[in-house]
Image 1 (spheres, rainbow, N blue to C red):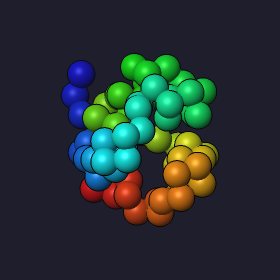
Image 2: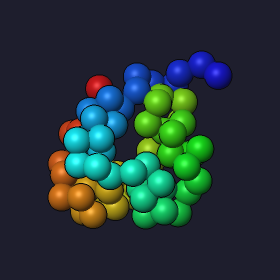
Image 3: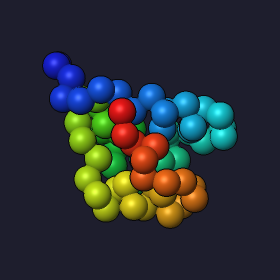
Image 4: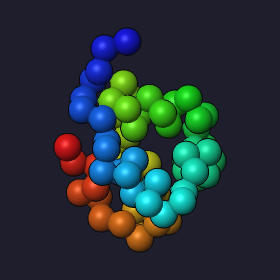
Length: 67
């Protein structure tokens, strides 16, 4: 599968640094772990509602998703 955009390495690094499991984020968004992985790794896009939910839950700014 070709990349649709560069991977969200800043967000991925944030999760690792805070000990937040991708499974937890997937549950927050109501998506599967596989779908979240695709979004983080550049094979699918986060929609604005997902970005807002993540930012509100983890008190981060949306620019963490910029590549």
